[in-house]
Each structure stands twice: as structure tokens, then as C-alpha cells.
Length: 260
Image (cartoon, rainbow, N blue to C red; front, side, top):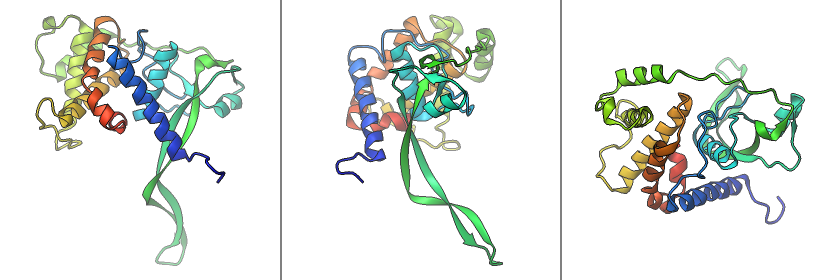
């Protein structure tokens, strides 16, 4: 290794910290990313070549980048994927780093009959790597995006049937009702029979704040999945909520990625 050359782990950790530092700075000024509106498609980043939807921390990274740069297209892909399809990343464009964690490896061993087989084994310590992706708006020649909007009325009915909440008339608009319903649904996944998160913490404690961060990010992600646009007062509701977690993020910037 070249002297002073950064490892993949160091690069990923530095990128994480930069994202959280920017988020904290914005929240201290009263908003999450920029004052531009979130686009319902942009917060559901996907790869048009592999047909994979980005998840967890990478989803948050790409959603933030989309908001910051005003991208309306949710498609993100690598330079090589673009080239292999005859598309071209525009000159001067910069990609967004995504992290990839490797938790297992394939090893060869002999079975009880002496036949060599391949077996997947868990690593003692996971390996981190990274790759960079470009938004479709940074790529020349890529086909136009075909949007498939969802019917908000149907989403409202489906959610309302599954959650006990005050009357819809108690909320200032349908988006506020949906954000609250989805937030509470995410809390329900912490039950001991499901993901078994510690949900019995006192209001105002760091543990309580962490669970609220999980629920609110989950609500934002689900709204993107359901095609519900975050804007106006509703968008500011999320901003005000997230400001209460500045202390948790300052204490440990990894908490954002754990929540994602």
C-alpha cells in the first residue's frame, strides 16, 4: 500500500461524517437538506441496470444528493454501467459514494465423501468497500424516465384500515395523516416478536431519540415508496422532528446509518 493512502474503511467513515456534519448544520438552521422540495420519486433511488433499489444509508445518501442537486430522476448507476449500455456520464460530473459491506465469503472444502464443495462462511469481521454512482440527469443518452404514479386515495384507505389513529379530520391534510400513521407503523416493527428494538425508554432520553429517528426515517422512506410528496408544512414537520436528534448525532454519527 502506498504511504498515507487511505483505506476503503477510512474513506467510507469520512464520507459518513461529512454527511452527518452537513445534516446537523442544516438542522441547526431549521431544515434538513435544502429549502428545495423533496420529490417523491427522488427519495426512492434505484438502479435501472441491476433493477435494485438502494437501501439503508445508501438510500439516505442518494436522497440527500437528489434534494441538494434538484434531481427529479430516481435512477442512479455506476460509470461502467452507463458505458456498457451506450450512455455517457457528462463531462465534469461527480458521483456519489455508496458503501458496500461484505459479511461472508465463499470457501472450498471437502464433504464427508471427499468431494470438493463450495460453502458460504461468515467473516469474523465484515469488510467494507465503496463505489460511486451518477444520477440519470448526469448521464447523456439514457432513456427518459417513465413514471408510474400511485393513487393517493387508495393509499389513504389502505393505511387507515391498518392503524388506530384519531379521525382524519384531526390532521391538517392527508399527507400529515399518512406521515403519522406510517411513523406509528414503523414503531410497531420494534416489538419483541418482530425486530425486538428497545422501545420502553423514557421520553427525552438518548435511547428514546434513537427509536424516534428510526420511526421518522422509516416514515420518510415509506412515503417515497408510496409516491407521497414531502412538501410545504408537511416537509417542515419532518425538519422540526429531526432537529431534536442533533445531540444524538453529534455524540455518534453512526446513529444515522444504524437508523437507516
